[in-house]
Length: 205
Image (cartoon, rainbow, N blue to C red; front, side, top):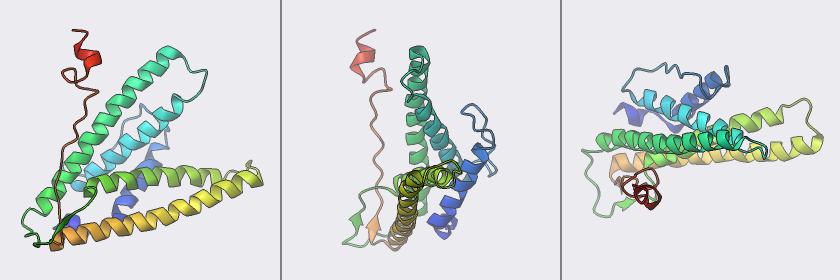
């Protein structure tokens, strides 16, 4: 039951560590040196955070109006692949939870949550990135007072979101462990990467 012994703040700590480690090189092509044992839950969380961090910066690179069109297309392809990897990894994290709660007998009135634990953790991973980058803006020495005030307000809101989302994740896991909520996993039915499902791809054959 060690997954349930971890709290959302523990997940956030792993995300935060990975983000800091990534920014030592700040390179989308730098390898990720995952410090956790392969196959462990923590290893998946680190890998998830690395995918999100790289994609965050891929999205930055594609934003400028003067970006080279060929390079932009390469970035778009890489972002599409990253999105698929992100989805696959979220489902692998949910597989851990499915195994965790497999022996729990749901109550007769147990309800289904609007999202699975891993998709809530996905939101926490993105939130960690927002907090990191807004923290940079808040601490910029060259920023105007107006910029500081705008960013500080958003930064404070993000910290509140972190507290609320972390609490909600902990509540959800507690309810799943008690059987007052039941976990069901619907695999993502993405079509755009599948040459047999996307008409723009299979019509070219």
